[in-house]
Length: 335
Image (cartoon, rainbow, N blue to C red; front, side):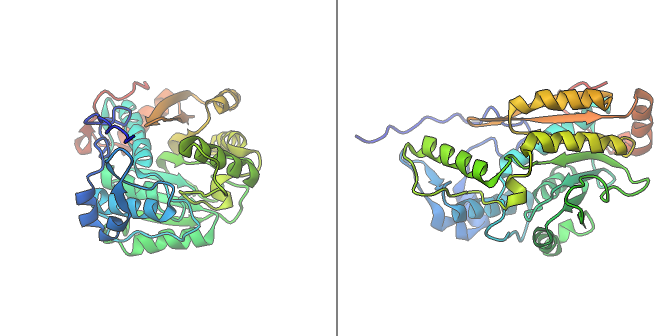
């Protein structure tokens, strides 16, 4: 018995309202942008054009096409074993952060390369700086503990003229530090973003991937295949996501005057409780949690600041010129 063709909504309702990815993939346009994608596009069991999201090469080809078509990236490639990030989800993070800045600026999103974004763990893909620059014109500094990943990100920047002068990369030589060594004296950032390691060990990461594959394919695979790739420091760290985020919060306190909003993705809802406790201990002046979701996957952004109301007002006056801003639709109120 053939599967009945699914009726799809015109737009994906859980995506951010300004997302470039709310509509279903137009593979004709994507293949035109990146012809190599064509070899991976086939009808799925419902008769819809799709790619095999369990095939790492297909995922990379789709990512490359999305970046070329929507973000005007001429060259994008990463080493085969490194994390291949889902573009729509990363884009939503940046959109939500833009709304957060807008909510701190009378509803107007700060734009242009005077706005500085610190990307903790820029990775081989350089994905957040690419998206932030295309969507809002922001400049970024990307930190990374892995020299190979940093070289990959540098290669992407060097081969895309629109990124030159807009993205700076910094090697974190102490893997135990997050902000130390990355934020220079008197340097200011309007936002800091991070996609922390999810798991506490390689075994845990493999077990979770196996569970997801079994649920999706309805059969247990012979071996775990990480369709989005990922090196050890990208997927797991000692203590896992919860410990990493708590360390990030404690260390961010030391740089409370240097960044308006610190933020991180939080993959597990249960990790918020310990994060809130740490934020209270460190006396964060404002904390907000922003829900995100694509398809059946739910996540959230945790953001915090240590600036007083007076410091936030001074920051707006000195760094966010109103004439260079554009209105944001219904930004979250943070003042």
